[in-house]
Image 1 (cartoon, helix red, strand yellow):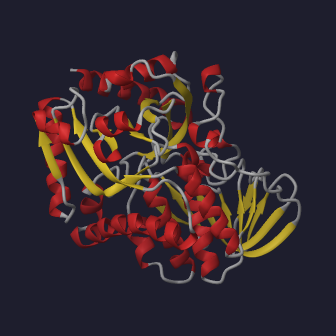
Image 2 (image 1 turned 30 degrees about the horizontal axis):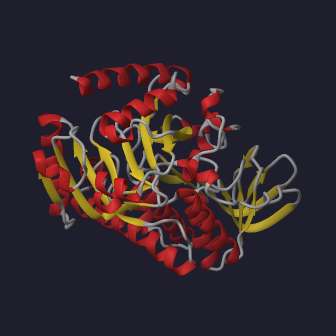
Length: 433
């Protein structure tokens, strides 16, 4: 996926792109193929679905409009987190306690699935365990304590700290409270995406890059048409942001209004001394605050601070992004104030109205996966596994998520952005106060 806007400070590679060697692009689709399943999108969820279906004996083709991992999967914060962006509330309210507990257990399984795939397929992606949640001020600290009590009640060991004890987890004066757990963690997302692609191809999947789906003919047999070819299949999987009109022809307009494109941005510094990195974040955990407009950050394997946040609900790149992000980073870590910023990048992620993942079917043979809402590093892998199970006739776990009801964002495509921008302004004001 291309970066948002035309600001020259974004027209450079992300740190992730700069730290991998992709090799030559895979050829675009230029033939007519007939297979068991066609997957639209070569991000985490599409690659996971393709891998899982191929391992179960299906012939699978993946069609990617750009390059593998070029969207949110290849340039996100790299944080693999237990649970859901929505919390458990939508699951409990809509599904009842038993299925809500099943959904929670599957979120833990999603974390384990990452490590199992890394081990099974030899994916070198800088995997690190450890996650620190932080809160500014007494009100945010109370909210964080309630959230952490909920994690502890579900079996996640949490190390809580307040006041000066916060230094056990992170060296900064900014936060009133913190909590550390080791079930969550982080990784290099683009290395992981490329590793999944290699694993899928080893299992027999054919991946075509620069092959945007221009139209999807539905029915008992599906036909996905690109500019120079087509794929006929029994099953289809729409994976991630391909439902957004911002990405090109809408292949599923009836569900596009249930997700919203949100711009999020990251800076990457030059490497710092390893001892400084360890002093600022002991154990090299990933960190995220609990503001509505949140900051999230971590040190990379080569000791660069990767600092994310500064979301945009307008699809416009914020002005003076590099300077703004550097200032936010320095407010947390004054010791990094003078460290040069080497990379600035950003792009869309998709959120649902209630921040719960939106999985379901169109007809009997098209599955869609969207609305990961910032928790996609782990949940996308689970989603791909659930789709493969459903395609092979074991839909019970997929249907836990498919039963969740999702609302459309108000105002249609053109009015939902101003509406959410106004809401974001209000929440920023609350966070500041």
